[in-house]
Length: 271
Image (tube, rainbow, N blue to C red; front, side, top):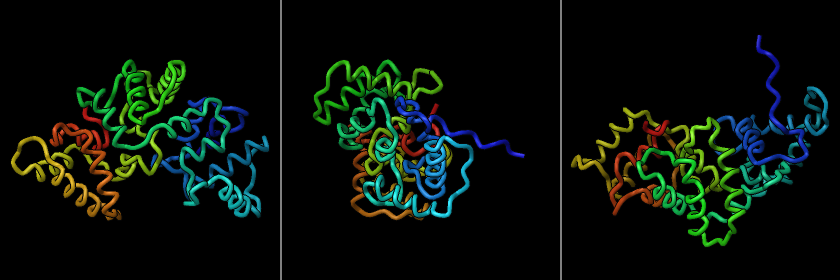
């Protein structure tokens, strides 16, 4: 028999640290798609109600649907029926609501990828913790945002607490990309479409017709279209252009090497 469901972390606290906030986020965004939606949202709302009332397990009240509707009208700022990280940050009292300031500062996934490429020099899909400050500082410069040293230090420490959970001093690209607003986070679009290295190698070889070890922008375009069709995902031309541009930010002089694309499309960064 399953034991009682683990109590979601910290929902009852008056004020959350950024890392507690992220634990809550990971707990409810169970499929990691960048939104709390559907069943996840019901669970979140029920747990939030329970934490606010400070009681034990609350049965779903008759007007649960109504209350949840009111709640969504208040917090689902873009009315898409889902809660994303920035909306959650407004629901929960986070002491250093740095996620929101960061998002206001960072413009696009292309800027993010350009900064990433500069620091992930060995193309491992990770940057080292000691490079994080430089990465954040570059990102804020690209977005044309002035910031002071203490603020930068605070961002760096907070992000380390949030993302380097196993303390190995490395931060993964897909984790860090969660700093981007959902619509800009093209890496999330590949959730559920992640490839094993065998699948990836087969696809890359197919598009790298001359075996040069890299593909160009047009080949990437074709590759992304095929990937979307294979996964029966809808994709408009504007989105495709944006993703292609973001992925091409990893390229070197218009050449996208196998290792760069692998970081975006494979389930685990190559070791």
